[in-house]
Amino acid sequence: MKKSEIISLLLANKKNHLPQKNFVAKTFAPSNIALIKYWGKRNTELNLPMTSSLSISLQNKGCEVELSQQNEKDEIFLNDHFVDLNSEFAIRLLEFVNLFRKPNSWFFTAKIISTVPIGAGLASSACGFAAVVKALDQLLDWQLSLKNLSILARLGSGSASRSLWDGFVEWHAGERDDGMDSFAEPLELSWPEFSLGLLILDARQKQISSRVAMQRTVETSILYRSWPTQVAMDLSVMRQAILDKNFELLGQTAEANALAMHATMLSARPAVNYFLPETIAAMQKIWQCRADGLPVYFTQDAGPNLKLLFLQKHFSDVKEIFPEMVLG
Ligand code: PMV
Image (cartoon, rainbow, N blue to C red):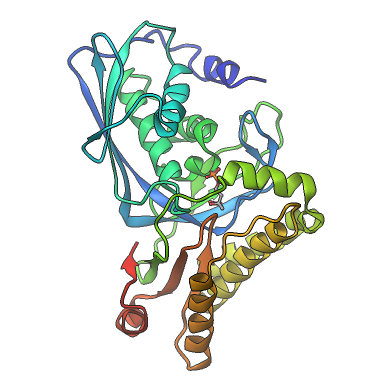
């Protein structure tokens, strides 16, 4: 099935496919960091994952979008800078918006403010597509449920399906070929003491996109065969750890899951390596902290940066050891 067919299904009874006049849609979506990772697709067109995944949304970081109708041509601004429509960033956004409009039927101005670096493994595309989908919902007055917006955001980037909510969110892999059962849902539980810090070791755009890396891993990595079983086990432990507010179990499981994901990448051919010497050095520092009795764990995505997991009461101890850390 094509993305356009899914969209037609979801918007079947919406009369209005044109923007509301003189209206500026304003939205925000938080960035999310997976504690149990999504790595590998069973359908690359619809971004249907091999496994379910579970994330935590960042409290202070994400993407703000202002979207309005424009008369003659599209215009995109990123962090107050004009974006060339032939750039990789603009092409990805235009391809997505074009799924929702007939050629030349209407044009838009998008003002995007991203408070996370773009393409550095800090979930900028997740919050970006989620904020754009919410903005389209307002501008075109669809009034879709968050569940259906999650399905639409997934078509832009898989992990975007989880950026529609705050807190802990699970994305159900689903089984259907059309992906109508592959959407995210929040876990109804708040844990304000749980903290996440970003350790930005290199904010440059990564050399290999998660899309390419994921596909290469699925196709060539022998270790990938054990990944779905590992995720199923890690997910059930993680759900229980969150429910019981068992921080140690959460930290151990998240860290082991991230390292297992990177192991599948290292065994891809050619290998996918997101580690920098600074990444390894930071991991060793974290393990030393734990040996010294400070409960801090990490997770890592498709980039060299780490995310630190700890409880609020340990913030100043962690900050003393990692002064460059910023709260997520
Ligand atoms: O949604 P994508 O294509 O950017 O992939 C995200 C993959 C990871 O960040 C590595 C894991 C995850 O679950 O977010």
